[in-house]
Image 1 (cartoon, one colour):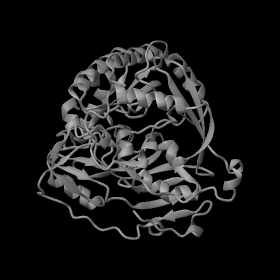
Image 2: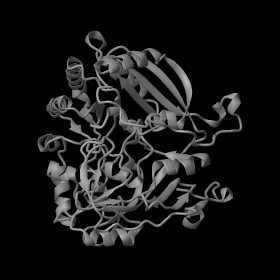
Image 3: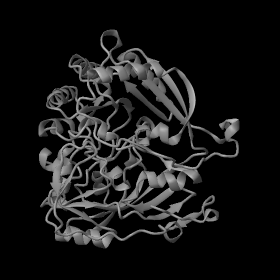
Image 4: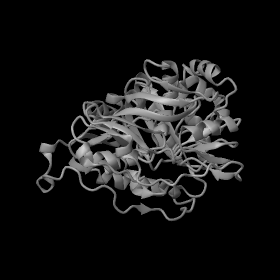
Length: 477
């Protein structure tokens, strides 16, 4: 999306309205009715489902599409990992609804359509000194998807989920109405939509706050932790910083079980810019992107290659401080287009769980011991400290530790994940719906105690379950 704005109008306390930040050119998409189904998947490329795909731009087209289809689910940029944004009868792609509508640089309040991505927001607003308060590990997610998944980031321990910074959202319902939802207006629907995985309606627009930043750099401190106990302790210590996260070695055993590299980060102030950057707080964004051009052979990722990678990565993670640009710090994988191809044609599954703080040590030790014993190391394993629960009944985080693991989509790994599910459930934890592609109803019911509240709200606003996905059908939502 190309957006033009007159810089003189984006000064302190200026309000930038829709015409001033309107796309220079957007090709109006055709709504595709009766189109032949196409194979569709989430980012994990598992499962692949034959779906009838539709597009809509703007409120009128969305409402018409809802009326003309018995069942549908909204889809943003397709970055949820599993089957949350798949509906065989009608998968409604919202990326054409991508207009910036308003921005108030006094309050940092941005209003936009649901199809705007965080990448587009960063491209426009980072050079003006603004950044999303909460961002997940990829910038290629839409605002609608960020709300529906109630995404969290490296700062959940301080700033909560994306929904914590929402002023309001406009939601298209199954009966054709559009409701404004906020903390004071249709508040129960507002909360349920955060983390509701698109099952409450189609998000049309939203207003949320950005964070003022003085530069496009993050001061990153790297800390080594020799085992799980130390990793958890270092993450707790790092929670005084705005951002903290740990890469964890899933194949380490014995006294090294759970060893990690802990990263803490803070936005760099203008006065702390290095000499070579004085007077240039924001460098041009973008640049050439590397790409994985084809699917890797399925055997590429095995216990030997993952173990070698882990040894090298840990060895290179030398303690110290460095100034890192925003994108490499927040979105390291976004530098490689189609990185999901490294898992081969079978795709991959992510297992992201969160355990309550009092049960985290034992639960994580049990999971990591099982993974290590099976030589089923995850190439991308991330440990974070979470803060308070989100507002929505299906919002993922709780106060404790969250562990995200990626595994090739093999039969053996799918069996392993069922065992990990049981460990999570036995320790009072839950799975992240935005990453799930195969869990069962039982682990869902045990992990989300407010599930009945969500079902009762759907009974009020969508009794015929007009909004549904392959995931919601699988989990009986």
